Structures are given as structure tokens and as C-alpha cells.
Length: 309
Image (cartoon, rainbow, N blue to C red; front, side, top):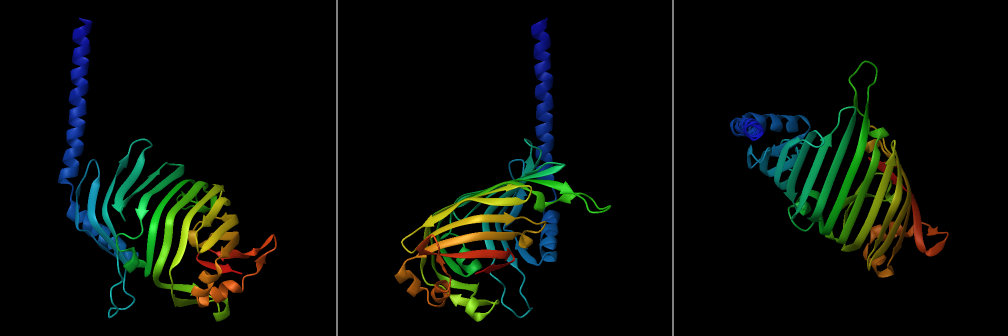
């Protein structure tokens, strides 16, 4: 009798599980993807971006898009359209453990993963795995010809707070967690960058970049209630050695985060000559009191408008 009761219990459980899976599958298959695509494009347009999707449809318990192209809108109607950033594929769906929303995709020959979860505290996790910067259209999008591979990870717990009678929102200025970065054979093979050079004033100056080998870089930041400390930042290549220590104070908006970093670098003399105007600017940075072979400067201001002296 016990065996028969157990068998009945198993059948009920299997029927319930099958019904749930069938219901979820039906929702994903019959979902109005055209309407969702129009809404996503409208939201991107309102934020100042143009969004193009090769296709949008059901994935494995997720909504899957292919050939995702995101570009800033042209400054004027007659201006050429900016080059978009391209993702090969992107899937967005629910996360069960912990409950929340997750996204995964492929880009630059590697993978991208992100998850947002939590109620009173928002947990954010982002992982970039083995991105090859020479692949994709990063050169056209950024104007800089990058090479090398990048791994990065972000794990932050962001408490929610409210101002006045408004709803509680995540407060990045009180976040705790870590951010890490690792590069292999990182290099710049040319391109154009807007760089603020002290001798030419505070406004960025467009400069043609020579070949710059940055090599292997390892960095880690740890945050406690918005106060970040550089636990590690070092890099070494035939062109330059790098090191940094200091703090980064977060704010509700990332562009208002306040760095207070001591940046040390040791450029190869031939490399510094090759840099041209940038090399001249680097020569104005004072020597490190502990080791005159190195130069040392301070990065302050805001992330959206940094100052280096």
C-alpha cells in the first residue's frame, strides 16, 4: 500500500512539473517579441542611443537576441551615424538562486555574464571572461586599435535608500564588494584618443596614438560602504611598468566617484620618445621620491572629469 501511495505521489509531482514547464515554454514561445523589440528601441532612443537587433525570440528560459548593435545617436541629422558596439548574442531571463534577473552573451570571442538580485539590498555581479580586444568592432567603436585579452569581475552589494517620500533606490555611494581586472598582452596598436594634456589646458586634445604595449596588468579594488581601496594594481611590459595605490570614494552616480590615487610609472626611454606630445607631458610628472627611476603623479577630481598632476 505504501509503494502504491508513493507511486501516486511521484505521478502527481511529475504531472505538476510537466505542466509548469509546458506553461513556461508556452509563455516564451507565444511572447509578443515584436512589441518587446519596439519597446527596447524606444527606451534606447529616449536614452540617446540607437538599438538594432538581428533577431529576438525565445531561448532556454530566456529572451535571446542576436547581432545586438548599440550606438550613440548622431549629434546632428546630417552627421554620420556613430559606429555601434556589437554583441554577437545576448540572453536575458530570470535567476532563481538567488531570485533576480540575469543576462549572458558572447562578444569579442569571449563571454559576458551579469546578474541583478535582491530586495532591500541589490546584489550586482558582472563577469567578463577571456575577451579578445582584437576581435569584433571595438576599433571602429572606440577609435583605438586594441589588442590583448581581458578578464574582469564585479561583485557589489548596493543598499537601497530613499530621499524624502520617494521610493527607495540603490545607493551606489554605500556599496560594498570587489572589482578585479586582469589583462594579458594588452596593447594599443594605434588610433585616436582625446587626452587632457596639462601644457595645453584642461580640455581634451585629440591625439594620434603610437603603438603602446601595456602587457599584463592585475588590479583589484575592495569597497566597504562606498569607500574603496586599491588592494593591487601593477603592470609590466617592455614599454612601461605601472603601479598604483590609493582610494576611490563611490557616489550615487559613477561619474561623481572621487579617486585619490598615487600613480607610479617607469617608461622605457625609447618608448617615451615615441609617444611625442604624450611623452612630453609625461616628462613633466615629477620623480618618485623613493626611486627616481620611476615617476609619480596623483589622480584626483571625479571619474567623469579626472585631474592628473
